[in-house]
Every structure is written in C-alpha cells, then in structure tokens.
Amino acid sequence: MSTPAAVSFGTRCAGPLSAPTTHQRHHISLLRPLRSRPFPFSFSTTTTNCELSGGLLKPVLFRRTKGIAVAADTYQLDSSEPAQKEVEKKYYFVVANAKFMVDEEEHFKELLFERLRLYGERNKEQDFWLVIEPKFLDKFPDITKRLKRPAVALVSTNGSWITFMKLRLDRVLAESYEADSLEEALASNPANLEFEKPENWVAPYPKYEFGWWESFLPPGSNKDKV
Amino acid sequence: MAAEMALVKPISKFSKTTPKFSNPRAKPCSSYIRMSSSTTTPEKTATNSKKGNKAVIKETLLAPRFYTTDFDEMERLFNAEINKNLNESEFEALLQEFKTDYNQTHFVRNKEFKEAADKIQGPLRQIFVEFLERSCTAEFSGFLLYKELGRRLKKTNPVVAEIFSLMSRDEARHAGFLNKGLSDFNLALDLGFLTKARKYTFFKPKFIFYATYLSEKIGYWRYITIYRHLKENPEFQVYPIFKYFENWCQDENRHGDFFSALMKAQPQFLNDWKAKLWARFFCLSVYVTMYLNDCQRTAFYEGIGLNTKEFDMHVIIETNRTTARIFPAVLDVENPEFKRKLDRMVEINQKILAVGESEDIPFVKNLKRVPLVAALASEILAAYLMPPIESGSVDFAEFEPRLVY
Image 1 (cartoon, rainbow over the protein chains, first blue to last red):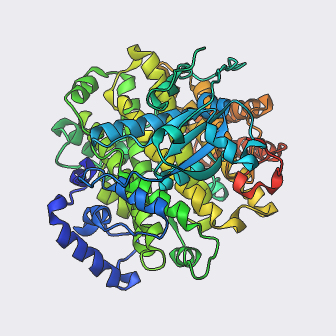
Image 2: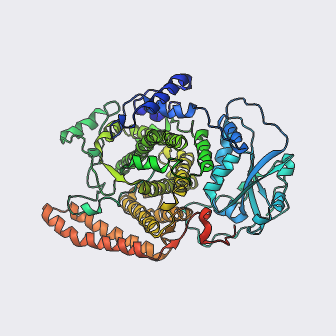
Image 3: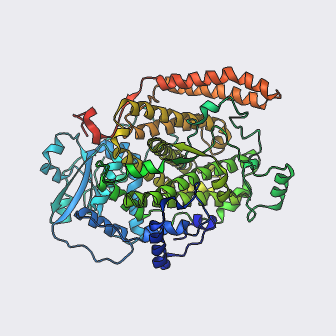
C-alpha cells in the first residue's frame, strides 16, 4: 500500500502484511485524547500513512440492507469470494432520458470505463449494464410519467454503487426490482438513439464518440443502429 | 484538491502588504521552493543560497492556500445523534467507492518523465516547474485538511472519518506524484517544511464545504480538459504527467461528490437566502482566482497548445453546470457579460502587476494601486450582483416539482 507519496513524504509504511500492527495503531489513536496532536498537524509521525492504509484494511461495516452487503463484496474485489446465489437477484438502477445519460453527461462515460478497467484488472465479473428503453420500466408508472423517451438505465446488482451514481448524476430517478435471470432483468424494447449535434461546442476537444455505450449493453443485445 | 481558491480571504489586507499579486516571470520561482537536499543539484542550491534566501515562502493573494477549520463544530455536525439528516446510505456508498481504490496502481512513473523534462528548456521550463509546484501545494493542502478531519471525526462518525482518510490517501498520492515530477526538474518541495511554515486560512465548516467542493470539481474539469485536449493534439504532449490526468481527475470528481453529500446532510447550508449569497460568492471567488491566475501564466497553457481564456471559460462553464446540481444558486457564467467582466479584471490586474514591477518607492506604488484595486473590486462586485441562476439537487426538488428526467 506504499503509494509514491508515502515514499516521498519520508514515512515508512509496511505493506498489507502488517495489517495487525496497523490495526492496533488505529485503535490506539482512537483512544488518544483528541487534542493530543498540536496544530498544525505534525507530519513526521510514522503513523501518518499507515493510518491511511489502516483504513483500507479495516473490516467493512455491514448494514442490514442487501445492497450494502453486495457492495461489501465489491470491496473485496481481489479475494476469491464465491459467487452470490443466483436466485431472485435484486437489480438497482438509475434512469433518465438517453440524451442526458449518454450524450450530455460525459463524466458518466469516464466512470463506466474506469469501472470496467478496474473489473478487468481484478478479474471481476461485470455486474453493471446500460439498458436502452428497458422493459422493466413498465413496473414503474411513477417513473415513466416523469421520463422523457427514449430512456437509458444504468442497472447493477450492486445497490451501493447505484446509490453513488444517483448522487453523482443527480438528475436521475433511482429504484430497484427483482428478476430471476439476467436476461429478464435487462430486457429492452427496440429504440434508436439520435442526438443533435450541440449548437456551439466550445470545448477544446471533441465529444466522446457516438455509440461509446455499446460496450455496456447487456450481453447478446442488438447493438442499436444509427 | 487540484485547484486553488484564494481571493476570498485577504481582500482586507490588500493595501497593507507590498506585492500582493505575483508575477512568475518577474521573480525567480526558486525563492519559494525550499530545496530538499536529496534531489537538488549542487548548482541550483548554489544559485539559491547566493542570494541569501532562506526558504522564503511567498504568500501571494492568488497562491494556493492551506485550510483549517473549526474541528469541534465539524464533530457536532457529523454526530448522527444530533443531526438526523445524515443520509447514511449515501455515505456508505461513497465509502465503498473510496475503498474500491480505482487508482491504487495508477501512479507509477517511467523513464519518459526525466527524458521529457530534460527536453523542456527556456522559459517554458520555469513555467512547468511553477505548475508542478502549485499543483503539488494544492493537493498537499487537501491532504493535510482531510487527514486531520479523518482523525478528528473518528469517534463521532467513523464512516465520514474513514472517507476523509481515504481522500487524504488520494491527495497524498497526487502530491507525491507531482513532487516526483519536480524531481525531474531537479527540484523538490519540502512538504514537511511547508506544513509548518505556511499560513493556514481559517474557514468555518460551511465555507470549507463550499470551497473544497468547488476546488475538487474545478480540479476535475481542468484536468479532464487538458487530458482530452492533449489526447486529440498529441504533438503538445510535452511531459507525460498529463497522460495520467484521466484516471487522476476521477478522484477529484469523487471527492467533490463527497462534499456534495456532506452539504445535503446539512441542508441549513443550502436552503436559505444566506446560502444562496455564499454559494454565489464562492463560485465567483474560485472562478476569478483561476482566471486571473491562468491569464498570468498564458505561456504554460499556450505551451501545451491551449488558448488560456478559452480553456478557462470552458472549465468555468462546466464547473458551474456541475455545481448547479448542489449549490442553491450559481452565477450566470454563460452570459457573455460575465466573460467581459473577467477580461476587464485581467486588464486591471495586469496594471496592478505593472505597478509592482515599476521602479517607484513602495509608498508611491501603494498610492498608484489604490484606484486600480478599487476598479478591480468594483468589477468583482458587479459580477457578483449579476442576476444569478437558481439551482440545487433534485433531492430538494421543491424548486421544480414537475421536473422531467
């Protein structure tokens, strides 16, 4: 866990192997009186960066909801946790009109590719998809009456991550549903996506390419045509 | 924190001290880098000590700042027993995101860095050093603040505390990476020294939220814009650090999201007329600081193939759109009058700088500055008073109940 920074700050912090020690330190610093360190913060203590990784090594706080339990698995990406039970999986989603989701919000594309990269690096099976005009929306009349069409949903079995995506995107509606199979969960109605070119594009770079989202459509789905 | 915000604090001190605005071309930058013995070349140290400069930190109006806050108030704010608005699921979700640690293995250098740095010569070299130094200071200032908040909030709110600690991990990485970059130029920032020697700007927690939120989000937009521009125009890719910006700035963006959640947990900071005034004030401070700063350093942006003003306006407009997702009011930066005002501020600022560089005695300089400073202040005030745009998170969507998504 020694980041380049840890080295350049002159603090030594052993790798993950030192977990128990780090953890102890963590504990000790919890018990210290709050005013123990003079302000401005002293910087030369050896705990500085160890505490950082101490946070990483701490057990996850579990909460009641299933969503969070799923999320805890995400954290243990590189551990060889057995796959979750296949029956009646819960799917979480955020949804908005297609233009907002895949045309305007370019940081959204970056987040999805970042996550895909991470899953690749850690050999984790993909658990998030983009669904254009999802069929499951029929179950949510309260959502559809507020939704411009065509719509695009981001669906994941990781409820905690969807909570984060709701926080990030803000102008989206979030809900969850259950389905017996992935195919059923991600079924979609045919739709064509077309976006008008922005009137005055002043960014010193071009827009992300039309169709970038195809990497995230459910497996086997028809790539939509222009 | 990748960007700085400085205008807010010392306006009152304007006329007391002599050179408030710095000009990188006029003063050698090395005077405020404290050389660290391990990485400095002998020649550099020699030139530096010849002047007898003993590690002077130049605190200018527009320099990146170190922040401190009222930690006791922070503890009260995040005590779940006192504050019932804490949306635990949002904080748990953020904690998972930070634990995932997307950039755990991202910040690995290669030999391209040193080679590229050696090729950067002439005036651009100095400007590059300054860019690295300022960026490193800004990231490091985030590290210090988040680190301390992580420590102080452990008891009252372990989840929020852990997020702060993980964010300080990110900032430490960023600062360390930038400092390594300085070593390519045979320099290093002595961060331990900086910690002790720099002045800390005090902000109440509410202002820390506004300021750091903006800092993180504007940092994201700066980095991603540079990254995407250089991807399109690789001939300007003069130093490999920019290739790291795409993944890097996702950290900044997530940090911003955390402050968004913090503010949602404190609706009193978002929902009254005072909040609206403060929101506009912080937006303006951040945008003006960046614009003036960058217009003093056009050589840097031009050096990587950007038009400084266009770059800045793009960053301001995008940051403002992002900020409108949480702040109760933002500035109408897309109104062409806003840019005209910024441009006038740049002109006045250049005149102020010219006074500083003149041969006049300090008293005359101050006298000459008075009308200019007044003109700058009145431009800033006029920009502040432009009709704002009502905004906010749809989670507080009373402002538009029939919003269509």
